[in-house]
Length: 173
Image 1 (tube, rainbow, N blue to C red):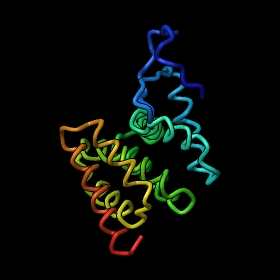
Image 2: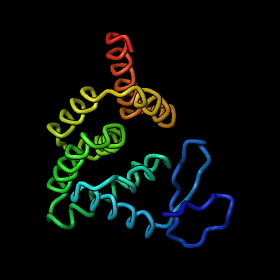
Image 3: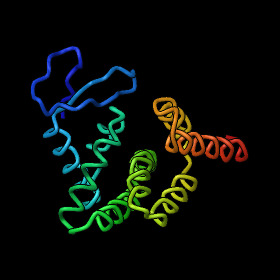
Image 4: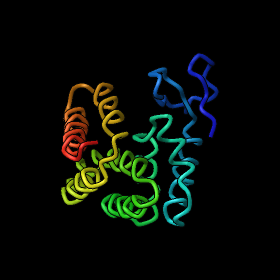
């Protein structure tokens, strides 16, 4: 997957913006995003290293790719609800291998589950994030909250960052 610098002219009318850590907008074609979502799905199903997921997280493109991954599962399983539940199951299996990456991807699944009124999925994501609570998530979630300052997801990212920070402080980390 090659992300194209936003300063270059669009190569396709289907280009989408993907923010990266530097807060400089980059873009990838919708084909690139679907390809990345498909690769990520294969890595999750086959329990192989999460190379695609690392690209997604480094580009802070979790939301875009997660929406596409859920769409792939929805197409495969026949319903959005089943697609979201299956995506959570795949991410749960990745928690042992790559907890930071899996937690960040779960965080991007959270609003999709909320929109589908899958409160049990939202609750499961909360539990997984609080249980794994690596320090890297505090900074990542704080940055994400800054990027979407208003709204319920901005508040949720701040809540996750604060709770994890408090857990780490209690553990003396």
